[in-house]
Amino acid sequence: MNVKLLQFKNVTKNINENRVLTDITFEASSGQVIGLIGPNGAGKSTLLKVICNLLRPTSGEVLVNNVPLHKNFKDTSKKIGYLIEDPSLYPYLTTKEHLALCLQLQGNPINQHTINSITDALNITPFLNKKVKKLSMGMKQRVGIASAVIHNPEIVVLDEPTNSIDVKGINLVKQFILTLKKQGKLVIVSSHLLQEIQSICDQYLMIENGKLVNTEEINSPSTKSYRILVPYTTETNLFLKNYFSIKRTGNFLFFDISTESLNTTLNLLIKNNIHISDIEKLSLSLERFF
Ligand SMILES: Nc1ncnc2c1ncn2[C@@H]1O[C@H](COP(=O)(O)OP(=O)(O)OP(=O)(O)O)[C@@H](O)[C@H]1O
Image (cartoon, rainbow, N blue to C red; front, side):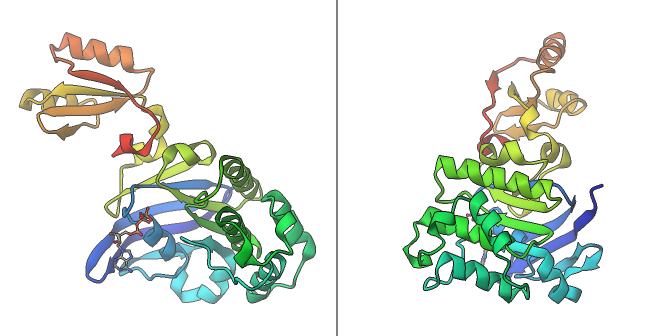
């Protein structure tokens, strides 16, 4: 059974008097992979840092296992593992020494079996005896991911984990994330490319200008396959509002629909004498959702 692990309640974060996160509310459970998607500067890293208690909310609350995060962070920190932005690694240690140190810093004894299973899964075993500073960027990123999970946390936060990693490595990381899911962990993974992580996510949190977009889009972005564009008029606006989540761009209105509802939608528009300016097939890139 999945257990509610993480709750954000109306979290707002200001940095240097700028509002970076606004009223963020969501919850996530064990055994889930949550994709945090948004363009550059949307607030993804800030939100992830709040989960890891690297930043405190200006207002609102974060609960882990129903306990406020900041009240019990010593215990909670053992439950959270993270890779935020560039991995902070100890350059003069070997990969093996680095991972062993990460384990010890969390108060765990060195368990070679744990280290091996993680390094095998991420294909970094051949580099265990190599100094971290001599690893390629992609390898460092994988060591960063290994460091995030080495102490067996319940919540794993990965900020753009596929940065600098080649296609083969990306597939490996995705498989690794699915293994963490199978182990019952909650994985929160950010990317500015929906297509990169959509196949592994159970749910999406789409963020734009520090705000989450609505739940419908969060839960089913990939089902919206067509964008319909119609000329703006007050009447058309009022009419379409009854059926779709519509947006305005200049002199046009647009809305996204699924493949299944394409015929019905076109019939509805034709019947009501609404001119169709364009029907666009949506690719699954992030730009389509903002
Ligand atoms: N320490 C800081 N001081 C001032 N502004 C900050 C700071 N950290 C983040 N910001 C601002 O907060 C906003 C969100 O930044 P954040 O790094 O969370 O976005 P992001 O979605 O992770 O972006 P990217 O995809 O480029 O990494 C940006 O406008 C950024 O300039």
